[in-house]
Length: 392
Image (cartoon, rainbow, N blue to C red; front, side, top):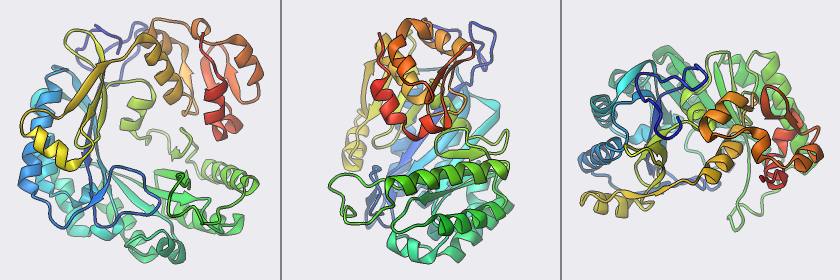
């Protein structure tokens, strides 16, 4: 919502469209094992004081909620790390506290990320009882050799069992796979994706493997650029044919099964972030649109948080807002709708885009009466598009 907008119920934009409410992201930074390709804020520790962490998360929630009282809560996302290592009582406590600050949307989505090697049917049942209604499983591969190479703690059989069990217990289930892995071929990925689609998912997150500079995995032989492109197109074709078209670069869903929490951020909505390293974007009680960032180190976050200092906040300038909306919105297949862009920024697309850059990007970028969006080929090279898409 724009600064100073009316914040009752689900909210109505200046164009009479329903706005999505606020999201809450909760970061749990701990894992059983640090995956070699992971650059998230995740850590392995011998012992976690769950009661202390529960109190700290509730304190952070109270602090952040005070910035944005009286909203409607549209989504909660427990991410990590491995949030399935949290005690279900902590999840329940966070949800209960959140609903003392905000009213729940009728379609409130509560997502928990989980790794197949850290859960069983009883654990799933406990998280469901705590209020989780959407499970996101970090499967990463349906091939034992690849799972071993990725240093995962589960095998294919455990992954499939977790998916099936999750589908019995949770109303909504998604799982992740990584492709363009070392030595992966089109034929092997086709077989793996067929296996994934045979599990009747409603949502899939399918990411191309990237290795950061300086990573211990830099010696891995990844598919060349042409093969990676072919893998991307195969992924788009197979998921669309199965009724799960891409609605974002890496996310595929049946109609109505899109991740509501991610859509809030991709569409320039507001969300609160709590936990080590969590980010937020929220309009505070003064009408200022803020970027919030919690202390990244778990030890620092916990120690400072117990003194009431969970992180920092800074005002987002109007041009920073424009750039963020372009960065996030162009990830979506639907792109950036004109009415939404003008509501959020107070500007038209033509007022901020360099027309010569838009012209040069024809075939990769479309600007028309509906708004601004990337083509299928454009989403494959989004970083380059953003580099060239100069604003005025």
